[in-house]
Image (cartoon, rainbow, N blue to C red):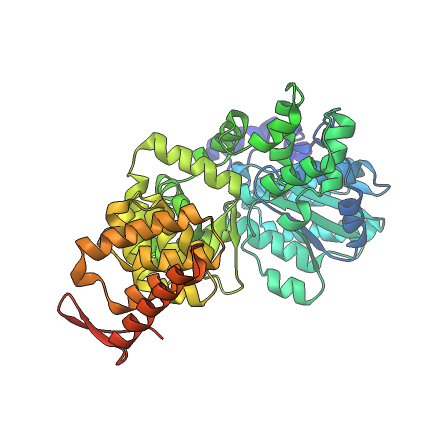
Length: 528
């Protein structure tokens, strides 16, 4: 480098004078790591993905191409494959946390460019090696070199999310804004970089490949599992595996490692889940251990919720900042999926969610049952009946399940959720059904409407009869009419018995003709 050559030509007198003035403030030359400048080695068995390679080829006009997804989505492998098939020159830099220093960052970029053509990065390297180096001037020198170079050039910044430096990101944005047409920048990242992506997008200077595009298709899963690994799987098994992993490439590669050693890989596909040791170890090592303790705690506790919304998380965890936490997780690709466009509902990637629940059980931070119980209360307060019931059941709290069913029984039956209502009634202990007489009464009606076997109707009728006898204050004419109508319409017996049940139903209906009755000292209105 120029500054090194000049220093070597100093006379001994100059050197003596320099020693008298004290140590020089010149920035020492950076010791480069060759591994950071090398294209990663191609791994055997990697699936070539023509559809994504075509996407990269079709985005040549964009100054910046962002390949943005969580760990394990094959970002680096995709760009590596693309580079190997290029006729254009490629300069590759694998980033790390040390590149937060913008001088270090651009020294590596300029060095990578200089290896494309000797001298192309020289002016920038000279500026970067000078005392008090101004990165903006070095970037300008590099861009001037690109214009003079004139030929197509691709610069790859792998693992952009590791920078964590506003100054470094600002210098990258400056470069992207001024890149000549013959140069494009490709960056892999686990989260959106803090640069003005919307502005670049509006100018047509940004192209993006994200999770939904990087997810494996069934055809790509077939290429990996059947053709490359020789695992005998039919399309239905491949479809199930892709659905189970949501196309997550790392999950499918790990599944391949597991399935190829099984006597019956088809059964293995049905069993494959986030609890599988290889998947769990991979995610734990790559994702969970890199998180701040408070973030990991949030993830584990909320993993029991299924669908997430900020208000629900606040209620369950007793905090007030869940909206900000979820937004940051979404921005940083924390294996979270937005379920709407407003940022109100989210869920975790299925396999990731299962791992989080395993981690919660091992950490013993809090009983999942209590978290489910709080969630049930939140949903119940908002009239979200099915969610409230599901969480109450997950908490093992049959009493809450019975209460919610009794509160919304008519709504459930009239909205066509008859089978769901009956299913939950059938799961409840007899003692709770007797405590809520309307449940066996409406359960009988639901079973009749669904054409359930007579033995099932008889069982529910028996419970309803016990409720009528043991809880007379809670047994209303409406319940009586419901049971008798069901007996008349659905119980297979002689005509005379059916007529008798019908008469009793009419009598009970007359008793409730004014649509009001007294139960446990309270005025009640018969549901219409």
